[in-house]
Amino acid sequence: MTQTTRHTPLTSNSIDDALAPWQSAIYQGNLAFESGELITARDHYMVASSCAETLLAQFSSIPINQSVTRSLEHCIAAFVVATLNLADTFKVMQKPDKACTWLCHAHQRLSVLLNHPEQQVRTLVLHHHHKTYYELVKFASMASAFPTLINRINQLLADHPHKTQLLH
Image (cartoon, rainbow, N blue to C red):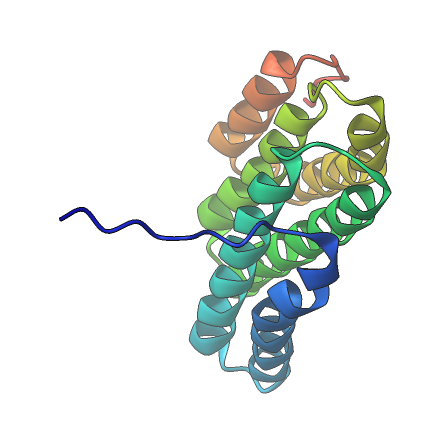
């Protein structure tokens, strides 16, 4: 006998509940970061980033309406906050390669969403996309001693469908 599982549709009414694990992970990560417990902070930020990215993928794949748009707005911000916190943690840990990886990941994920068929989604993403671009530029200016990281960032920006200025 085959067993079927019912899936409860994801609705914006559940966004606060859905983001609760993200909020807890960010809070715990921030406490750990402020206490200098960088490994613990990193682990919490990874959980938060994963949670937010999963929700982002779910909400961006369902039909858009006003409540889904509101939920997406929260998910995009949550993803960017968690991922940038993670990159900052790696910077403090003096692991610029990993910091660069997470900054690139955040920007790339938002770049993909800029191709969403719904203009409302693209508009929501644009502000955060500019923020991740700014963080990449800021990181590149601080990482000038690491030309391979600059090349990685330039490659990401060159592959981006909305061409931006390359870094040198």
